[in-house]
Length: 151
Picture 1 (cartoon, helix red, strand yellow):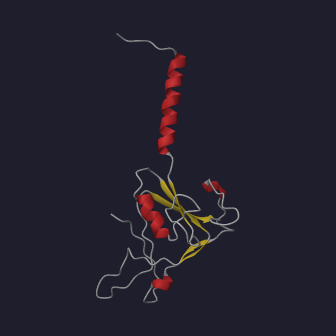
Picture 2 (picture 1 turned 90 degrees about the vertical axis):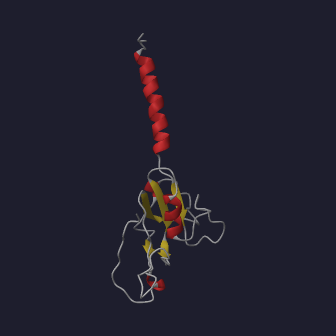
Picture 3 (picture 1 turned 60 degrees about the vertical axis):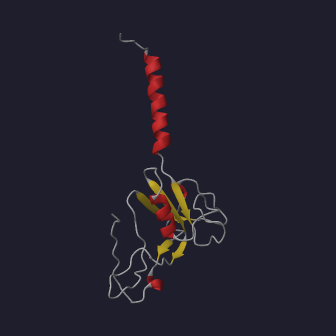
């Protein structure tokens, strides 16, 4: 027997399904601020990771689709321990290893006055410049940067 439902019930059911989908489809955000010297779990600006790679790794291990890493202003001298030039050189490339499903955004204030950014649209990448610089950790002076996705 087919049961007929009214249009109002149908609209109500669709609205509930859409709300459930939107709640599960939202991105998880991980925070990075090089100036944080306290607790570092990456779940807020107050407890932000101090390196970009920590944020990327945490976001990649999140079961949520579309994970984001928000990076506060400043120069990040990443050690790049994930990427090492093959033997016989065995040199650290000073790189950040990007991972599938993770978006990285700079231009946030982070810890300090105005640390209330809760939406990506609140960032100002022209004023709050974020730079990833691995040259400090390179044992040779390379002028080429290679980015490769992790399998």
